[in-house]
Length: 203
Ligand code: ADP
Ligand code: 5GP
Image 1: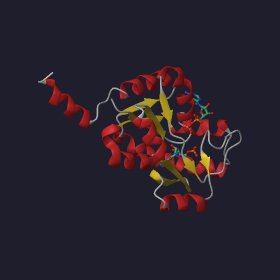
Image 2: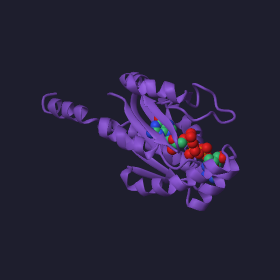
Image 3: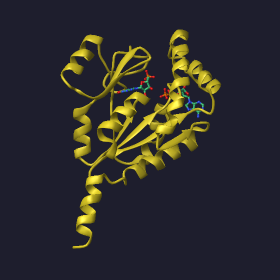
Image 4: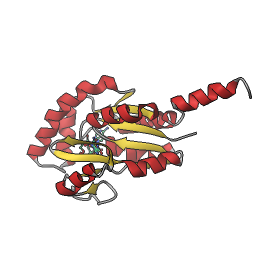
């Protein structure tokens, strides 16, 4: 059986990173796709662990070189998913997890939708999102305001996703995410289903 892709999207501050970290021991063997971004690192973020941090020039070179499976401008910075490590992980039959925005989800669906399961994560309300962004205290007020404005648009894409997790309780949300992750491994691609049907009568 080949690998599978799980796309995780939701407003900045929804709890995506916290949920992945909390659920990681319950998901089994997976590969987390480390994105490339032109955003400046936050305090505590490590290059090559949280993101590959690059300049706009480097990112634009990579676009020209066809490095990305998808990329988008989010909150005024470039973010992109490199194709090569994803392809390698899929070849090894792994579940590949993407933390990408709603534009990235659309692009990945259009390219490899057959392999994709998707989940949208949101706090129970906009005011709770605002509270979390301020209490995380990783971004300036102007950046937080921009993220809150964008969240009002992002939530409108919720119907495009296979699953929704309301992150009002981190334990419950992490368990739901682990369940969805493990189920997404079992999704068979169209090619695998056709093979199954072809062999079904004759074996
Ligand atoms: P994202 O990766 O989606 O941007 P984070 O995982 O950084 O979001 O979470 C944003 C903030 O909200 C962090 O400070 C995190 O500790 C906090 N947080 C996450 N989930 C919950 C929850 N269920 N209840 C309260 N705070 C939460
Ligand atoms: P942050 O700056 O808070 O880490 O991320 C901001 C937003 O960018 C989040 O919605 C996150 O999901 C999204 N993002 C992170 N990596 C990628 C990527 O490779 N591609 C796309 N399209 N979005 C990304």
